[in-house]
Image (cartoon, rainbow, N blue to C red; front, side):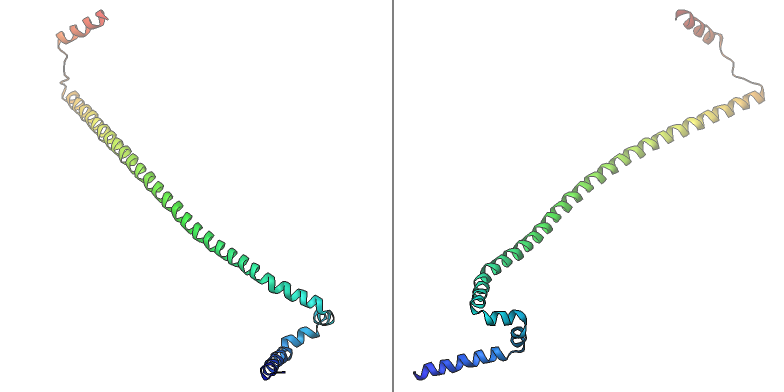
Length: 157
């Protein structure tokens, strides 16, 4: 053998020796599965080839899963942002509408209050004036012409 080949054989022997001296490898080889694979080298080689060949498709699949999950999260975040924005704009429109309705209703109620309070004050003021005149004994007398007009209006109807 050439000197380079002997050097390569020594390196390979040292690599195999370091693998066989590893405590995890020793524990595996002492297990039932390790003993079975040691007794059946074709099965061990087939399993090793299957693991080596399937590593690349499994890695691509895991990369696809992680990428899909990341994209789904980003999509959900974007979609959630769009939904929240649309909801916020809708809420703003509803609140503006409710504000306009409340201003209108409060304006109508304020006008009603002012009108009713004015009418009540006028009614009590006129009743107070009539009472004062009754106490003084001078009731306002209707003129005869006003009575005739009201009587003639009743006949015409």
